[in-house]
Image (cartoon, rainbow, N blue to C red; front, side, top):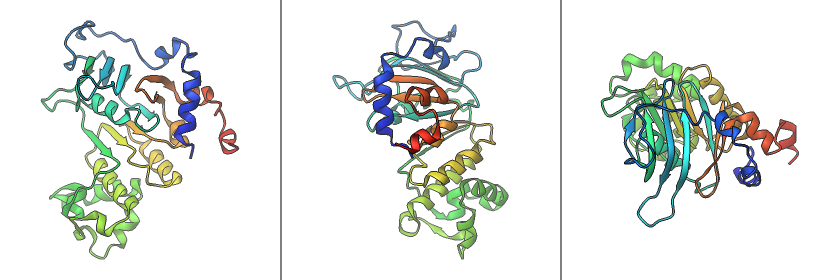
Length: 284
């Protein structure tokens, strides 16, 4: 695994020298007639350009008036089917950026555009954070809701993708295993696999993983990412794992001040950091 500290330090050295062409590689600068002009009231949802799922246009975000911005002048576009890795040091604003993309926060300045509003007419979204700790009467209900008996085939399919299948088959009570307090009976890795299985059972078109795989070993993370690659969903993954970063279509990199300093192909991201071969990183 490649620590994010060296990655961020390396990008900081290159940040000032990145050509303007990187913006084009990151799918920035696309216009939409319904998108408001600069200076209009921020925080409203507008019509994205054709083929866009969500976009941010010169977005700033502060938690309260007078505080330092957490996100600074970020513009980006997410398109259906993309696999995006979001990287940056601790405190860079990665979770805040996800919340802005999902419409869970409104920008302090700048504009957003999404293909969904508040009427439920948009994509099915599954968002999974690192520290989730839900409970349910039993494991089947936790994974698939009260009608889980009718979805057992789906549960097994999702569990195979997340590596949970072996644990489920080993539990004496199976889906009836009490699940009110997961922390008391299952390891952190097992809980994360359960929650990821639950997320997949929503059949999401947009899957957002906020360091949700970080407690798993690197190979397990890669196995899950590979399995998800056979699905058509859009994936945004906050990660520190080099192999996942390399597998992504695009890398979004935030610096410690909340600025987007890279938006482009993972190959270019690796090359800019001098990480253009697995053997290179293994020697460091």
